[in-house]
Image (tube, rainbow, N blue to C red; front, top):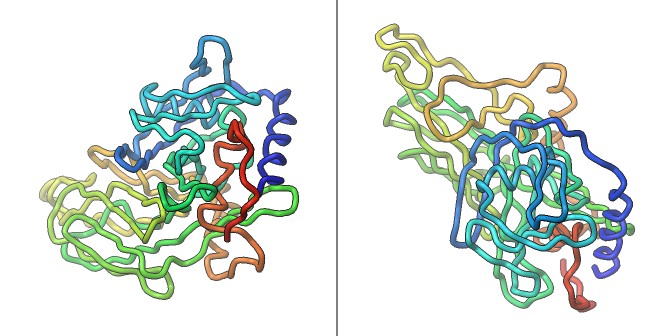
Length: 326
């Protein structure tokens, strides 16, 4: 693992000369701390981020999403060409404390520091307190679960959701690759409905009360997923329907987790379902197509996989122990 941390830092060094474009991105940001939670909220990344008054990073990056998603309520040091957040929304996790702030884009581990991971329109940015495998005990989350669900459902009618979980393995150079697998035994709540996923990662729910609600997915120590939903009779004026018309909300496309056919939306009134251009869907559907493929032997998963989430930008200031996990 120590070798992989140094490899990650070396990769960051190679990125120092590569500047991201300055185009802003419209993304959603979700923060999952041990005591704080925010979002998902829809934000537009700033042009640049200069947190310490000296070092400037392109805004259309993970650090720009962090800045916009927290309204600037974070702090950290600039090391090895990138910022290393230690406090987010008032919750502090320095290295060596048992947890650290990690970032996943569209459910995937990132192999670079926050100033170098470029975000694009429709991306979903998860910032979570990750468990530190080098410190005994569990003081943070393992890799996340991700929800596929319709944004609009019909009151009193059953509908199906699916949950997958992220598992990241590392090669000999320290490069992480995330795969998605069906999440068995995950708990899904949606308004007054609650269900547990089966062997195929799916669950059936029925919402009986009209109006906006929040999907929440949890499983063990994994970082949870959240998304807004809305239930309508089809003629109540909710969820984009017209009062008295009897128009059904119709069938929505499941969330694929990486911006394609994305049914996640910002909290607030849902006026409809936004869908990415069809040209990107076929390439992106593979994100969860491998949900039934087992993790390759010898790969490292869970908290070990997310260790370098921010460590891509900077390793601990003291030498890490040689112990491994997984």
